[in-house]
Image 1 (tube, rainbow, N blue to C red):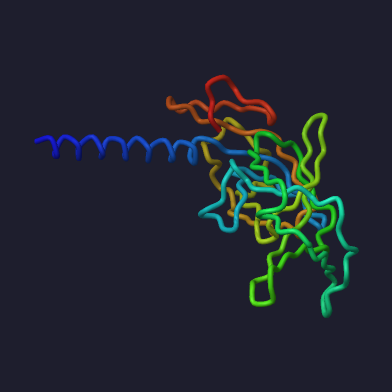
Image 2: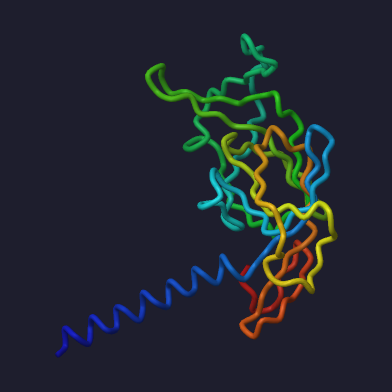
Amino acid sequence: MKRLFDLFALCIVVALLANWAAGVTDKTSFFGVITTRQGNIVKLTNMRIGKDRASAVIKQIVVYEKPKDYAKPTPITGTANKEIALTVDPETDLYKKRIDLNEIQDVSIPSPEVIWTFQKQKQYRKLEYIEVVLDKPGSSEAYLIDRNVKLFGDAVQDKPVDPEQKFPEKGAEESEFPLPAIKQVHVEGYYIKQDNGNVTQMPVCTVPAGANP
């Protein structure tokens, strides 16, 4: 009987954790405007960052401090890109920071053609990073981020972002933006869907009391 009770309790815990995780994913949607390197302007909802859409997140996005001392960029043969070879391992020798989308207002990629690389030895894979500038009121800081990361979202270019529409917005087109293709991202705010179905709109760099975007 005790073993049966323990199994029942474990099932309850797993269900609660699953519901909590689903709430983080389903009940918060960031929206904003993307300006691409080609000059296109795209309105997005359900903005997320990651290597693929399935694993993209709105919280705990990893960036690394930009080194103060580094070599000059050198041309990469056969491409328009340039390389800066790091002499330090970002994973072990640079300050790592985890950011949430609600903590930033603007994201820009100042030098998309410059690839920061690190390779421990020739037999190891060369890791690639790109510089990203994160802006919020009173602060602008440059970091390095994994170059393979992309911005994902649902494009609503032909109509305004409307907080009164159903959540997430119907008719939106799934879109992805490699970091080198981005000139600037302006995060306008985010929606939180309450348990009763109501949608609350919040500006970035603020968190409502009791909310967990």
